Image 1 (cartoon, one colour):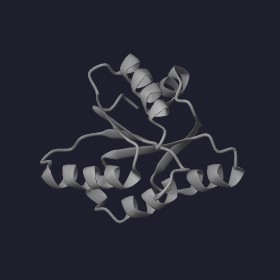
Image 2 (cartoon, one colour):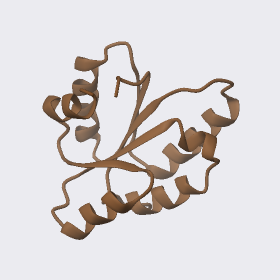
Image 3 (tube, rainbow, N blue to C red):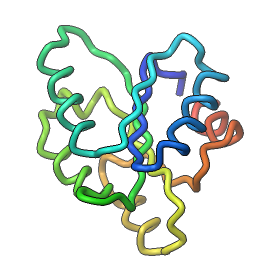
Amino acid sequence: MKFPARFIVVDDDAGNNLICKYVITYFAPAATIQLFTEAEKALVSIQEDYNQRTGHLDTALFLDINMPVMDGWEFLDKFSSFPPGLHAQYKIFILSSSIDPEDKEKAENHPHVQGYYSKPLRKETLSEIFSG
């Protein structure tokens, strides 16, 4: 899988978002990176961008599970209601500090989730994801 043109990070921890931005920039300096600390705002942005975009834009989305107001699972439920054409543009990866095996199993069985990785995002993780 080649590096996409855009990355989105959805995590209520601003510090983790900056780590993600640094690691992503190391591998894909020309990529657009959007950071969201609120899942709801990320969903609104995704929907608006899709409604205004005329072409296809491959996007990797790193999603935290444990967030206030709307958690990662609720985010995925809402994302699932979006049009299939939008789904095709996104590769979603869970990036979490959760050690709960049920979270990992749930992520592995979710149709929109491509993988489950532990925080923080590391260069090795990004290399593993996009080395194929």
